[in-house]
Length: 102
Image 1 (cartoon, rainbow, N blue to C red):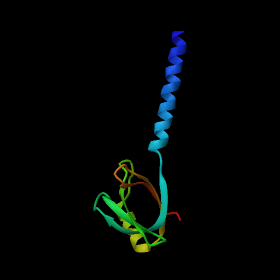
Image 2 (image 1 turned 60 degrees about the vertical axis):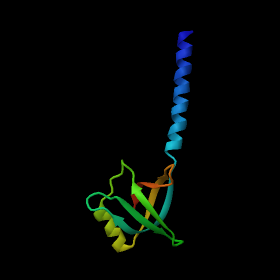
Image 3 (image 1 turned 45 degrees about the vertical axis):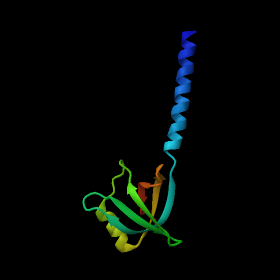
Image 4 (image 1 turned 30 degrees about the vertical axis):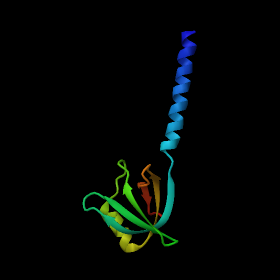
């Protein structure tokens, strides 16, 4: 009987974990051109202008490793990028990845 209770708790714990992972992993993409980068050694923020002319400002996620030089090269080239990002509770946009393979 104790084994059944332990198994039920394990299943419940895994279900709760899976639900919170899906919520934390919610992300969106936008495609556009990088038009501004702030930060010298570490990217503090960058701006992407999409095809409708609106601009979105992103801060890098802690786990992201964006090179300021590479992002500035994209400003100069005007090449399109796809940004995967998530919106925080306070409406800030946090960039998880930037793909310039476009």
